[in-house]
Image 1 (cartoon, rainbow, N blue to C red):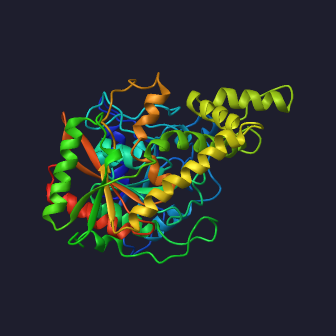
Image 2 (cartoon, rainbow, N blue to C red):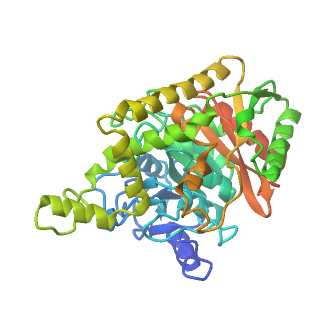
Image 3 (tube, rainbow, N blue to C red):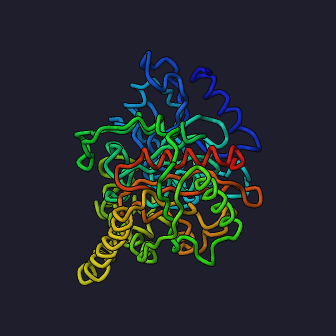
Length: 451
């Protein structure tokens, strides 16, 4: 196994050349840090999305507002990685503050897709997905607010897991939308992602949303199989607009599950069409509150002004990017007097309808759901930056899991025009092990053809 110094040297060399991906914003330079001598991830290289606080490395969130910022504390998930013996390689690029679906919104330049450098890797955890897909690291952490682990996993041809809300501590994750954010895992295989999830899961008293539940042996679940499981296929996730080639890959994955003993059934989630408008009211509303702290007063970059108000204005206008400003303004508007119930209140009611759809299906004998992760393969760099609504629809199949708080996973299911696409497994609350078993079966059924 490579030493941390060797891994960092290899990545540094790769990122210098014409084929650089811009996957990392910083790399480790302390090669003497003590590690657990007998942890389950002893010596395994792991990358961390740069909105997760670490000691010894900057935490910038891909924003000029936090350029050069070092956190005085470390996220619980990072401490758990160190205790398991993992080698923290560096911090990965992302859409600024996690707001985006392509990793083009980073203040430090876009990340490129390892399979085609003219295309996006997805977002907002595009740096983590690209780092795993390129073989820079074995595993990586990301955060998923509306699909920001699963969507880039699909576009980069790796595995990405969003756990149940409350399964993994959010302590040390810079908040975007607190009722939606979850730290998730990337791996080259289902087993890699499951091993990482097992290490970072567990109750944390420092996170008020953390739930005290035992952590199952997720890695063992990869081999469990699907004999007798009912796999629902929601008709709303297979619209006529879906790329026919993506539909073919989904059908092939479902046939693999059927051959392995699963019962495949067509089902319905009737309020799916509310998901995107619901998400893009709730997430910006929470972001407008969470990002109020980036004002130049307590930490991060401070611009000068003749008084406090001018300093606030100068700091926020000069250090925050266009997409972040757009979402702050949208969120502030929907929370304003006279509009709160019309927009925010209505979105909360829509969210409960979406949650009830999943509750009804999972209580009716359906064990898991299987859908495409994204409507298309990776799109070209710059193709959607001029149309925010089109960009937002990149997450049309993923936001529902965050709104409902259920676990979801993307697993590679094939290629379309040479580019990877993913299939999404959604499971009931706290049933990550079942979800991982289904994904492991898909991975074995396709036998590497999905890579």
